[in-house]
Length: 286
Ligand code: AMP
Ligand code: FE
Ligand code: FE
Ligand code: ZN
Image (cartoon, rainbow, N blue to C red; front, side, top):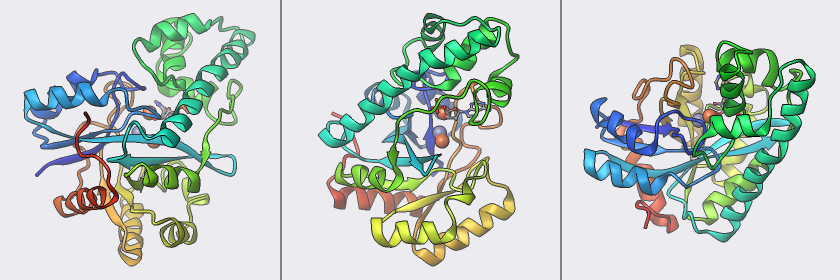
């Protein structure tokens, strides 16, 4: 079985619609896909319907933006109930805060000589229900200010760059509890990518596992080199964590993250499904 448990669609910052994503999953020979859009469940029904047409199973997921101190960390949640009141309220606050900071970022870019309006960004975001910096980057590309998303992040949008503006997110521990209480299982997304090992040390991961029943960690990810993957695999093994692998596919929005470039072993997937069932989560939407 070929299983890819981390992908994005146009409902957040991917460039393929949920339907197109599932179609591509089929042509890429994948059997199971988790759609994990940022802070929203809105693409799941469409993806599930398309999956039925194309013969690809959908595992309902999300990628939740959380923080440790002043650093963003991402959680992958699988099988949580989209209508859970506490989780959906929190996601709604995060999405609203994404909109709120849009004004401030546009203002900073405009002051820096790159005139940009929230309307430009909304145009670039199309049907997305979760608006992110990648959409701002797309609007900058459309205006000819930068070459691609990478350049926009590198020079302007990343933390510490001139147009960076923080936004709301929940503390990591709270995010884990919210997903669990909604019936889902929780995997730390790319835990040692982009310098995140500074906050997600082995000690921190061990304590998340002991005190918050963290279910697992994403090991096989493009942000992890071979040495990192081996260390995370061993750490996860010692802590009894489920170890996953996935592409973090964003369509043409992120280079080098092709569908199926990393995979999750069938035993790990089965373990996640069992835990979702035990927690009272969902394996199908609606
Ligand atoms: P936000 O959700 O607004 O905080 O933006 C974070 C998103 O930007 C994450 O989904 C990342 O995948 C994406 N991202 C970060 N750096 C880059 C980059 N250099 N190129 C494209 N996307 C990026
Ligand atoms: Fe993203
Ligand atoms: Fe992420
Ligand atoms: Zn992602």
